[in-house]
Structures are given as structure tokens and as C-alpha cells.
Image (cartoon, rainbow, N blue to C red):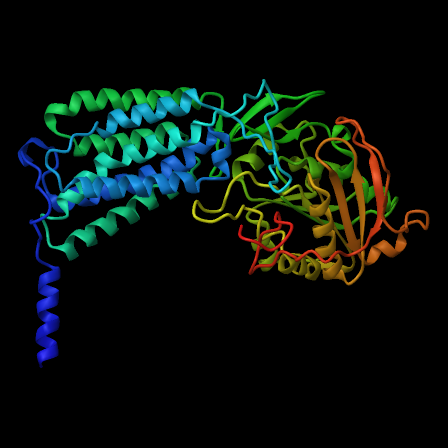
Length: 505
């Protein structure tokens, strides 16, 4: 009985407003929305929506933040915490959110730099394909961090003040509901690939709804100015659920495709593509593959190469719907228009898990994303595609005489060794590896029962030429069956393929 009474008293205490520490806002009648509960909902919506906007929008222009979005997350947490704590002081003065939003937009627009990598411990996939890349300023990261944190303070201060005006359980209920609604709204924006002008307009509408009548016009002008900057920056771009995408003309025909201002892939005739696209077909001359699976099919160059080499049926899997659509519309070879090709828009690992089909050729076709799966994890979109478990799933999808192929610019010899060893462990035999000179350390890794059919002259231990090669010289410098190394494999429990040894990611 005493325990029940004690619990009831605790619940009543939790559901009683505490006005001793915060100062309530004045002039409630001067606002468009006067309900405290609705204001808590809208402020929480705006905070989560703005956080996701920063995580998506800023890395599209400040290029190294594509990989280090946790800096933005930390800044948002700092700003929200500081804002809620500042509500304790009625005399606290701080610029308005519309003004800080405009300032942040201006800083991003004026500071678009590219990351310089000075150590082989970091693998950085991609660089600008047009124009001259400028070195990043050492003050850019703290500058962006400061402006992001500052922009969250006004909204969070208002939220902290409102929390004292209703019972705590009620306040947290509307806070959580608003946060969930903000997250859901941004998910819908990403799903329909809407560009940033809609993000800023939506956020601005919520902020204006929360503003005072006497400051409405000034706030509206500031929001319009910030939205205009976002609109200007998005000219001649496409926005997918993952990237800002831009196209530039390529030689001899077609387009280069950049994502988040970083070179990603090119839509050019298949004959002009890198030689590692064709290596598997050269290794088995006259042996046409019946049914191929291409993971990371992108704009279609791998598919075009497979079609040109007689593959009779192709399933092309690409996670980014906008990149896939651009390939279908603009690739000069039009591979996705061929009736032998089935386009699938999904994650490669998900496809491997769910398919019942069997393929005699599976290609991991340069699946190197330039974004993280989450702002709170050092995992890229392809992290779970390059694991021992994923390779085992790929082998299960092969026919008895099927072939698994990986190719890319792997940048570092140790990464080629690591991936080749992982593939070798999957098949229980050494992988056939071709490496290429020039910039980027291109390589092809091949395994499967059909390797027994390669010419005797090719069936030798891996050897590599000594001496440097020119950056533009993409020719075979090493080839053969590569011995397995003792490097730890990436697994679903430790999916960090781009680390040479097990360490903190």
C-alpha cells in the first residue's frame, strides 16, 4: 500500500510543471500559435528537420563533410543543449534563427573546398573532375561547426522555456511526436528526391508560424534570402536520396557524373572505359555468360560492356534511383533500353539476401559510395557489401561454374590483398588478380570454378613489374594467382574493409 502511494506521488510530481528554473516567455498573444503544446510540437519538428537538413545539405558543398557528418551532429547537439540551458536566463540575448540560417547558408556558399589526403591510412574515393580544386582552409571546420551550433540555440531556447509551462510528461510527449514528425517529413523529401529549395521553404514555413507578429516581416525576408541561396546553389543539379548530382560533358561523348562535388563515374561508350571492365571477358574468350548480376550498376557502363561481350541476360542492381534514371536517359550506349537487361533499384546486399536466381557471372562493379549510412556511424553504403558474409552470399547465388568479379580503383596495395584474400577464403582457392599501373591502383579480382579453364600461360603465381608507371598509364603491371595474406577480413560484425588492421574505425 505504501509503495503504491509513493508511486502515485512520483507520477503526480513528474506531471506537474516546474517553473522555478526557467522564465516563461512574455506576450503570448503576439504569436500566431499560442498553444504551448502545439508550439512544443512545432519546435521539436523544426529542430529535427533542421538537423537532417544540415547533415544532407552542408556535405554536398563542403566536400570532406560527406565522410565526417558526425561533426554536424555534434554541433547540433551542442547548440540544442546550450539553447535549452540559456532559457534559464531571461536577460540572454542572441540573434534570431532566420538571421543565423542566412549566415550559415552564406558560409556554406562561400566555402567549397576539397579534402587533401596526406597519409595512406585514409582511403578517399573520388576527386573533382572539372575546374581547379582549392586546398581546404584550416578554419573551415570550426567555422561550420560554430555556425551550425549557433543556429540551433534560438529554437532550443524557446523549447526549453516552453517545457516549464506544461507537465513534464505532456511536454516530452509532444516533443517526441514533433521529432518523429520532423524525421518522417525529411524521409518523404528524400524519397521523392526533392531539391533543397523545398527543404528550406518547409523549414521556413514552420519558423514563420512560430514567430511573433511584430517580427514576421523581417523573419520572412531572412528566410527568403536563405532559401534563395539554396535555390541558386542547386542550379543544374539533381538531388537523389543520397547525393547532390551534377553532370558535365565527357570525351568522346556522354557525361561525367559528380556526386557532392566529387568525381564518381562517367557515361561514355563502353570501348572508352577502363580495361578492367573487360578483363573477365578477355580471360574467357568465346565463353559467353548466360545470366549476369551486376551490383552497383550505376549509370550502366558495366552493363554496356557485358552486353557488348555477349552476355545474354543481365540483372543490373543500383541503390541510387536518380543515378540509375540518368543512366537510362543519357548513357550513349543506352544499355538500360536493351531487352536483355532488368533494372533493379535496391541495395546490393538486400538483393543477394532475397534472390532465388542463379547467375554464372556476378560483378561487384565499383560500388564505392561517397556517403555514410548514418551520421553517427563510420559506415559507408557499401560497407556490408564488402564483408566475408556478403561474399559468401554472392557465392551461393552463383551456378556451379559461375565466376565472381570485383574491380575498382582500390588506391592501396594492402586493400587489394585484403579483398583478394577474402574472396579466396570464400571459394577455398587463390583468386586471380590483375593490377593496373597509373593513378588509382586499379585491379580486378576473379574467382570461381571457371578459373580452371584459363590458358596455361595465364595460370601462374601473381607477379608484378618493378618500377614506377606514369599517372595516365592504365596497363597491366601485375597478374596471376595472389597468395592469401593474414589481414583480418571485414565481416558483418566488423564491416570496416577500408582499415588495414582491426582498430578503432
